Image 1: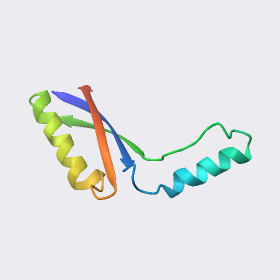
Image 2: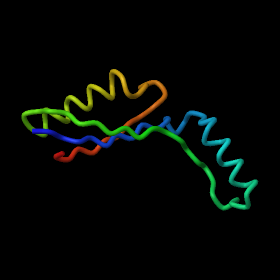
Image 3: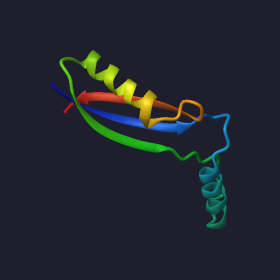
Image 4: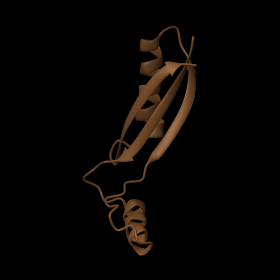
Length: 83
């Protein structure tokens, strides 16, 4: 079976997000001061061939832990669906 994963990788809340801070500041400059605390991360989509959903989840989780996210600085979540 083929599964599609939608993965979001975000910096840990306790860490400074320089991109988010820059965007927050820029929003104030264009009269959007009511928007605050912008955080910027990555959105990744991929397809995986697996025998079942549990196996697909395990593969996606391994990809996130070993390659797609830096566990020291980032956390991740993902949703899996049949492709």
